[in-house]
Length: 212
Image 1: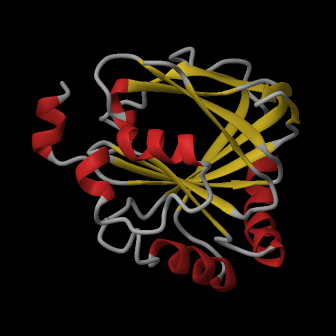
Image 2: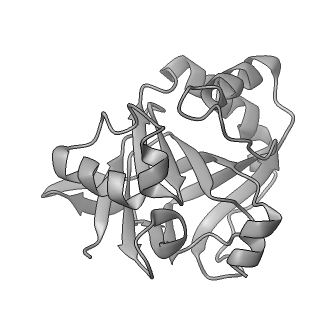
Image 3: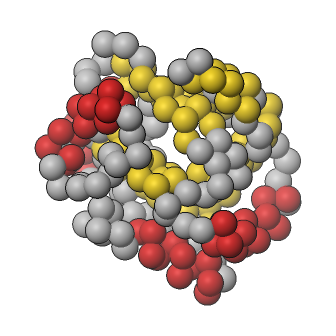
């Protein structure tokens, strides 16, 4: 199975959902593949990776950024993560949000495609510096269950999914975000600072045992 790539555009218009039970769950997530090309839509349906457009407006992006810039500024960019998956990043876990920002987040999580999932109330805010990279890795079940939803802010980025073991994106594919400049379908993709708001489903005890 070949590697799959997708550009996540900037401007806060896109969210990315990664689902461990790709094919069965897909039948209950209508409309998530609208923005994908034909080949990529087929890959997404099979692998459990979906994107959907027009999640928030530019003004709403500004509201979210205003809520996180101050706590992010208190942290320095780290050279490398303890597990070697990322470099030049900083992160916070934020549960308390200003009312306007909380309303935006609640609306995103209440979308019909996502409403059935129970997410950790603390949003994982991941700030990747312009020269930062996320190397191929699989998120540990200890930190996130079968569903991860990410809202990408500030810039476009190329995200790569590659088979690790099995054929479902959440646990059996690695994912990575490429460096500042990359190519996608013959076009140059320029990436700047990227902030992701990550909503993670809590793993159940059975899932922890299964992937232990």
